Length: 108
Image (cartoon, helix red, strand yellow):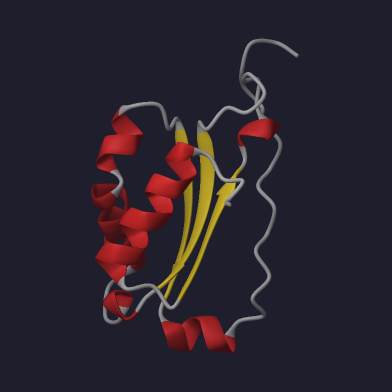
């Protein structure tokens, strides 16, 4: 059984189905923000797909945002996207940088 939440699973399923991903990571970064424990509001996705071939980075991001428009309209506050072609992924060091700490919120 997966320990990912409902929103994370929805993101994973939608991206896998729409993009036929070669590699996919859905990382819940909500814990880094001033939200209740177990929240699913801030995510980073690492998506590798042949469908990105020939697309500029902004078009890749727009494609991912369009696929996840429902989640973005209903609870997901932030989505960080790493979108690569399989060739770019293979040539990379496959190390995903950590997101910076939250600088906003409700005064910690």
